[in-house]
Length: 237
Image (cartoon, rainbow, N blue to C red):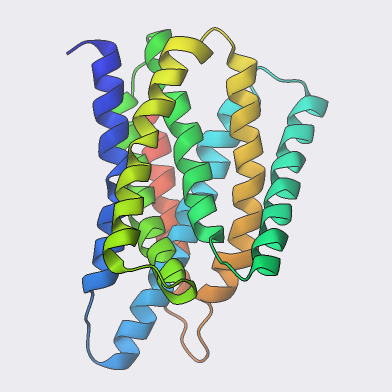
């Protein structure tokens, strides 16, 4: 398999975890009721931990390599401000898609980085794609439940949307492989912009939803999600 075909296959595999997570949210039925509630809050926390690991271990470390301190901070803050603006617009319009935006802002820059890494001749692409897939699974679960509760879209339409978005991964991966690899500072800026937006989304949306009164288990999901990122980071490096 040629390198560009490998990039397409790996990013598509990672992207398909999004509709899979949505399907799990559709099908999950666990009793008793208290256990089902704790599981849902735990998955929300797990997604937040996975996103934080993407920021701390992938997006920021790789994003700052080719940028000055001032430029890196500017792009990072711009991402947070942009997501705040998006959140305000969604609130005014009555829509809710913050977790969907966080999911894509994590997935697409990592797909760009994966494509660029293959163009550089780097290793570890398969492991990075696996880490992306494991992040996308709980994020797809949470984004599906958010959209299901805040829109009138049918199940088929929501899962079809997630399936379509999965194909953005190969487009981003090929863009990184074919065009952005000669411009590492541009890739870094995109990754830092996404990191700022993700950090805003985690504390604005995911962390408050993960809390459950008189239950202490769900926050361990965040620890497990971040631990997954740590394991992937150590294996990649």
